[in-house]
Amino acid sequence: MGCSSGLISIDLAAKILRASRKSLYALVVVTESISLNWYCGNNRSMLVTNCIFRVGCAAALMTNDQSLRRIAKMELTHSLRTHHGANDSAYKAAFQQEDDNGTTGVALTKDLIRVAGVNLHHHIKQLAPESSHCSKPIVPDFTTAFEHLCIHTGGKAVIEQVGRVLKLSDSVTEPARMSLHRFGNTSSSLVFYELAYFEAKGRVKKGDRMWMLAFGTGFKVCSLAWKCLRDSPEDYDNPWRDCIHRYPVKAW
Image (cartoon, rainbow, N blue to C red; front, side):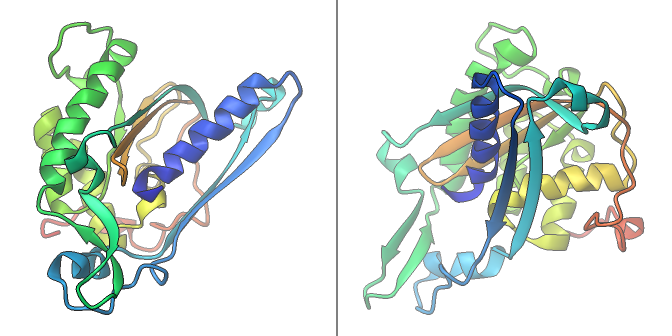
């Protein structure tokens, strides 16, 4: 499912919980293990994944039990998933295949950044009316709809492309850039490292709105909109705990 599988899993769990009349719990664990797709050949487009992907993991406990709202961190208010695999260039932008010598790997094409930008445009055309009440075919200012944005940390070029498409300032893309600097591309769990960055900085306040955006092979785009139910907690296991005082850095 690629880098968007974390948000897709959250969306799937939320739909199951909402459809039940019973009080249920869902444990969502998202992880990236690069060993399966480690490439040992010489094809340059397939060697890139060895450089940018890193091991990462995150877990979330979800429930539809309203009595637990007082201790919950966040409430999922909206989700959107769009799939663009009908387009050949989108489908093959990131593709597992064999090289000329029969060695399996994931190829990231030069068209990936363009595909990400085009499909992000299609995605926000559907998302914008839900989040900012804008029905015109323009790129709205999402910073007026959300206090915090966790955008896809696929690589430097991807972050810059998302920033251009959404017209985001460096301060808005800071968590994505710093997560890439500190942890690399942890694939499905990457946006949760950005959430942890906001929490470690003490920026999350009760009532704040947060947008998580992730891309994945296919080509898929997934968004989750959250409402924060309490201020940033001081979690002892926050992955930024021992280094947050050094961030942000200028060179990333």
